[in-house]
Amino acid sequence: MPPLAIRAYTATSAVGRGREALAVALRDSRSGLRRNDFGTAPLDCWIGRVDGLEDLPLPGPFSRWDSRNNRLAWLALNQDGIPEAIAAMIERHGADRVAVVVGTSTSSIGATEDAYANLDDGAFPADLARADVHTPHSLGEFVQHATGLRGPAITVATACSSSAKVFAQAARLIAAGLADAALVGGVDTLCGSVLFGFNSLQLVAAEPCRPFDAGRSGLSLGEAGGFAVLERAQPGDAGLQLRGYGESSDAHHMSSPHPDGLGAQLAMRDALARAGIDAGEVGYLNLHGTATPANDSIEAAAVARLFPDSLHASSTKGWTGHTLGAAGIVESVIALIALELGQLPGTLNSSAPDPACGPQIRFQPQRVDIDYAMNNSFGFGGNNCSLVFGRA
Image (cartoon, rainbow, N blue to C red):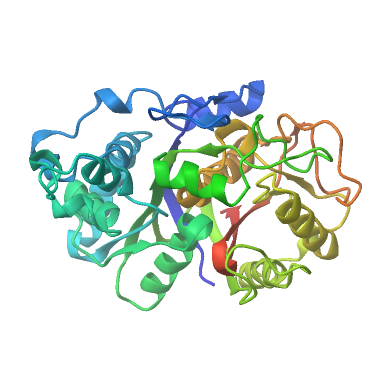
C-alpha cells in the first residue's frame, strides 16, 4: 500500500497526559494501575484510571457533549501538537477533505448509566437529557465538532480492535479519493457496564494483570484516549509512517478467539504483505496480550508460527490496563515510540513465563534501533487488526 505519513501522534492514559509521559513510564517501568476506586461499590480489582477528568468539564460551546468519554477525548486532542497538525491539514486540503475516524467500545454509555440511575418520574434528569451523549457515535460527532473538520466522520465499534481498525479505515478513505488526510484515534473510559460486564465474563483479575505469566488470572481494565494525524506521504518525506494493515474475522465465537489463532495469523500476514516486508524485518511487536489465560496462549502460538525467535514482542497492559476501544491507538503510539526512540518495552508485572509461550515473548525491556514495529489488536467477535509502522 502507499505509505501514509504520521504528522502527529499522542496518547493519554493512566500513566499520564501525552506521549512523553507514556515514554517515561515505559522506560522507568512505572505502572499506572491502582486498586479500583471507581464508582460507589468498587469491584475488588485493579484499574488504570486517568486522573482529573472529574474536574475538566468541556468548554461551553461543547457542553451538550459533556461526558467522561468526551472529556478524555478533549484532553487527548490537545496534546503533542495535534491541534497544530489538524490546522496544517485544513490549510493544505480544506476541512471538507480531512476525515475523522475514531474507535470506542462503550462511547458515553457511562452518562447513560447515570441518567437511568437518576430517573426523574420516569424521564432522564434535565442535565442528562442530551441525545448527543446517548449514542455510540457520540465520540465521532464530538471530535468532528471540536476540530472543525468536515470530511467523512466514522465511529468504529469493534470492541478492543476499534482504534486499530481506524488506521485501516482511514487508509481506504484516502486511497479511494474520499479524503486527503485523516484524524484517527480512539477513546474509552471506565463505567459500570465495562467493569461489571467483564467481571461477569470472569475475565477480571483481583490483582494487577500479568500478561503471559504462567500464573496470570485475568485482565485489569483501564481508560485512555489517543489520536494521530495521517496524510499521503510525499516524495522526500522523513518521519514515521503507516506501512501496512491487516484485518480478519475469526467467525468463531462472540468472546473467544479461534483456538488455533487462525484469524490472528491472517491479520498479521496481511499487514506484512501490505507493508511489503518479511516477518523477520519486524523489530518490535506490541501484542494484544490481555493476560487472560486463553487469549495470551493463542496469540503467542500464532506469533511463534510466523516470526523468528529473534523478535522482541511484549504486552504493555501492565502499564495502562486494557483500555478496550482505545487499546489500538495507545499501543500504536507505543509501537511508534519504539520506532522513534529504540525503546522496546518488556512485560510489566510478569516474571514466570508460561511454557506455552514462545521465545518471542519478552519480559525485560531492550534498547535497540529498529526499522519496523507492529501492533496487534483483537476484539470480541473475532475482529482482528494488525498494523505495521516504519520510517521514511
